[in-house]
Length: 308
Image (tube, rainbow, N blue to C red; front, side):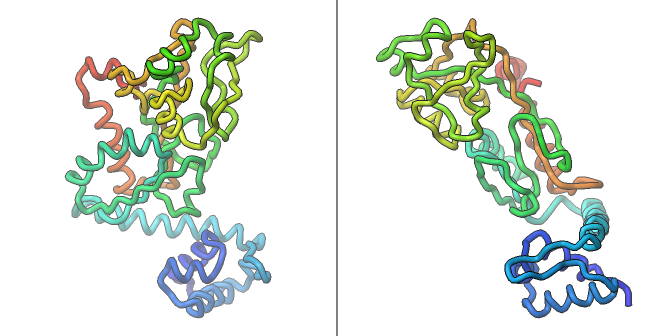
């Protein structure tokens, strides 16, 4: 007998979720039906794809080789269906988007209303994670990542670049004075991240000529928490323009050490797993994001965070 698409889907889902039970829940099947489907596939292939232990499932060498082909087949079918659907109607279905809390709140949330008006058949699911997630494990369609990408298996589209600045509230500066050089920062409350440690390297040059690395008085996992701490006068922060543009324009946060600050811009990219054509849902969201950020007037565009 020939292999069916359902059997391939069961196999890939078991691998992605790590267990037959989890795969059954995701596919809305019984555990026994999922197990039988996997057994039929192995019987048809005359080989063992997954080695079952008491704690987990492990891919065999044959299973690892077959997984690549199985993903390609499923993806090819999905793309064919999406392309035909796109010919008849607008993008539809669930779109899972992941971004760090600051980007979600300051960039994505303000654009959701217009996106939903334009694509009412897309069901948005917005999730926030401060660290790098596994898109397959979290069943995420597209994620926004800031900084250099490390995962070469991901496809990406550049959204823009966001500059880093050293900031403090007027209340903090009034109470503690304004540092006039990099060395003076050691006498101030510096606020930073608990991980990764690279985020505590500020766009300043230390006495050794290297990037100035701070020892935070307060550490947090979220840039939004740092922003709120700075607004409340708790100390000095280094944050990206996309989350502080309005604070700087209103005077709630003030840039300091301007002559000493290096022009350091972080790339902001949308990443996704697609080996062939991008699904219409993913493309519609990324296109809307880029178009919205580029639709401002020339005066606004000159000072917006996403300068390329």
